[in-house]
Image 1 (tube, helix red, strand yellow):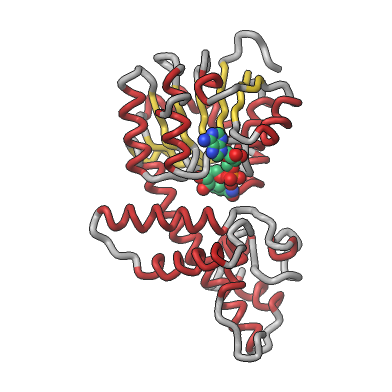
Image 2 (tube, rainbow, N blue to C red; image 1 turned 90 degrees about the vertical axis):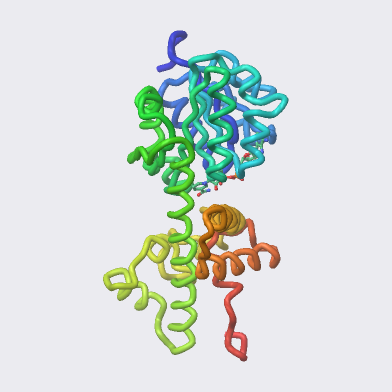
Length: 304
Ligand code: NAD
């Protein structure tokens, strides 16, 4: 139940992930101010009792915690250090928690600017998709001070079932990018396997049943076999409605490859997989679930 003394939370970015997360906080009794540049995205939260803000700066006024859940690094920079950004109004002693998947260097830069204003920052990207956001079962990878995480744990535990401290500023973002390399490449491997099986006359459901109890098992296989008729809840059975968009996966691979390049590392498999997700985008399918990557894999000469 919301009381006048419950801490205020500002929530910025109410898309696929942010909306259900903000909704959980409201239901758990936190007093919420919300902002999204798309007014329609704010409406369900306003209907549920949140205060609508006119800018990130306005949302952050009087907030003990500010959460950002935005597409990429530049959006986070604009919403935090920009002209109408959070840091123009955030109170000293408050905590800014960025839960977007962004460049670890940006996470560190935002933390440095914020610290100079007395605001603590956690980078706290998540895994678990929109379903995990809705049921509070996200895995949250946290970079920043352990003491700041302790102060934020009650809030974060409304959103996630596993909250893992990964190290100092930027380390939550770094661990998330390493995870995304595994998720992106395993999805392409699953898609290729289904292409191979189908071309050789294997029933996709049989392939799924065998591989989920064999060495080919993976999260990508279990949650989103990329052909319809295998698992009812798979995006493939719903026109590849996301889920997690192919464009966001390409963005995460961009970030992973540039983080690798910054330390002189080459990731040949992630580079090849990145190009497939880029092709998904240029085919006009970037807003589909990332399992739609099967559609840009080569076909047999007869098109099957
Ligand atoms: P989304 O595109 O569905 O939502 C982003 C929201 O941010 C939109 O409502 C948009 O209007 C808003 N926005 C953009 N710029 C803004 C600005 N300057 N100020 C205020 N609002 C702004 O994205 P999403 O799927 O919710 O993903 C958000 C982040 O979470 C991304 O970094 C993504 O990589 C990460 N993530 C997503 C998933 C998933 O399954 N969708 C899972 C894990 C992590």
